[in-house]
Length: 319
Image (cartoon, rainbow, N blue to C red; front, side, top):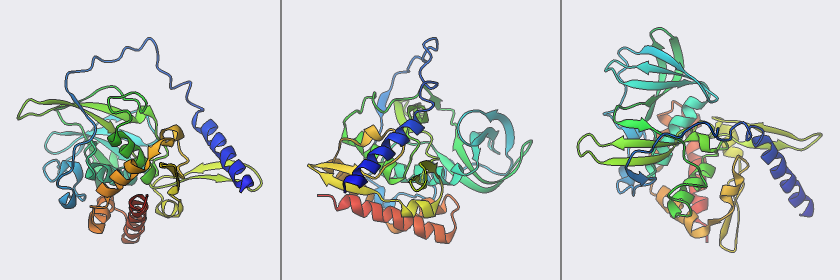
């Protein structure tokens, strides 16, 4: 037991070192001025009263926002991040950011599960095969909407936002562990200024904009030498990774080994039960639809659905 604890502490230290190698470079440039934040009501989460009937196949955009694939044209390349991205225009003249590569499937499914329980998210769809005029033909392309009534503002910080220590923010942190999102960092968060075209109401939606590093695991291989490996969009890895470690004096401990492990230091049992209660209202069909929407194979859909259901049950069993 003593050796196990020592190894776990050493692993956490090495992971922290690994994930902080770019921390200095990511510090805010003092010469860079933040954009003035427009007026609007800050929103992180809204009660999903229709949760049992939410369509996770179509996701937050529903049928009305589906891209028109009759003609898709290339506009420009998008820089930054792990995946290749570029901006396109669909047959109705709407703009999208296309993401290709390993993260396209995982992000599509993750967005649907986060949205299902009430959190603000991006709007995206997975296209199994897409031809883009002026760019080429690609497999498994995630298209993320860029609606005219939504302005993208600066990032928001996990430690500094209007929702710190609320059960809603704690629930979102737990969702990051449930999805095995090991790439939690402030630069993956975005504030969206949303104007309702019908009512004129303005809101500031706090979203986790990049959920691509999900449904995998972080591994620390000890024999012989220390080696850290990370995976994303790997259903088998995801299914093998443990989720809950323990509950001590009302605090929940997770087997989370990604970035920002400090966010998981003070998750209370009642907060975990709350998000677990919401997730438990999803049917297996709905959970599976989130993965079908991302074009996973039937075997992968079953594996991912069973793993997510198992994690939900673990949250529900916390006392």
